[in-house]
Amino acid sequence: MIHLSQAAIGEVQRMQSKCLDARARFRLGVQAGGCADWFYTLDLDPTTAPDDRVVDCDGIQVVIDSQSWTYLNGLSLDYSEDLMGGGFRFHNPNAVSHCGCGNSFSVDPARQATVPSDDCML
Figure (cartoon, rainbow, N blue to C red):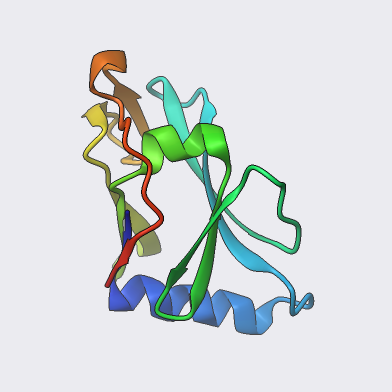
């Protein structure tokens, strides 16, 4: 399950409106590294691999690769603006710790999400 707040949906729609490739979907992922073990990746991507999960969140097609799904299942994504600018905020139930920047996290392998779901909560 992935949850996008209305603010996050609005920001993704704004990003997509500026993208030159109309086929581009919102891709979420994780990569090894960052201040902790993993960091979040966000992109607009027109490609979809056979093992990608595609979740519809209020008209937003969210694409997540199979490795990232293990770490992102249950994620709530918000968007907010403050004096420092705007940015996505990640609320990940799989993370056991976060770095100060909020974009990198660690997981306990014993607590990783094991039940796959294509549900999207709004």
